[in-house]
Amino acid sequence: MKIPSIPALMTALLIAAPWPALGDAPLFIVDPAQMPFDLGPGAPANAPSRAGNLPSAAGNSAGAPGNGSGIRANAPDNPANGPDGGRAIWAGDEAVGYYTTNGGTLNLFTRSGRRVAYRPARGTRSLFAADGRWCGTVADTGGGLAFGVTQACAGRFFD
Image (cartoon, rainbow, N blue to C red):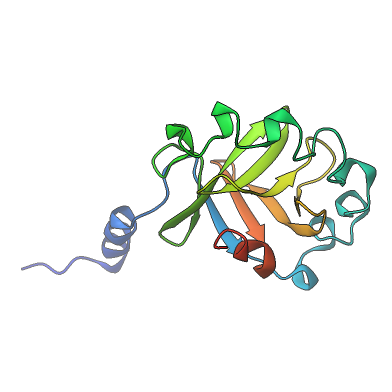
């Protein structure tokens, strides 16, 4: 019996691993103090106090019709927002929520449809909590999105 080579074995393991579907987004923890300046809350474009980042800005407001889970595109029972729908947010092998866009604003929701965070349509890659606190950053991996969030923000997916 021939023993497979290490590269062949690693390739087989990677293919067999349970990875999120294309379009789904992994969630990982970041420490704001360890972030590169241009991605962290200290950069002017990422400051929670910047007018375009405020939760009261028209495009960011939880009260804006396109930012709530009450519309079909953002509803938790929409199949596109489920674990197999292509917009799931994964923490390890568990789907903890989903993401949607509205006029450029990116919204992150829990599985039950509670809005956890948003990224304004323009000017930043940062995520902000509903109360305006800096929550993390969005990485465009070329094949999809990944969300690097603070421990506190990640905890909101499990409340």
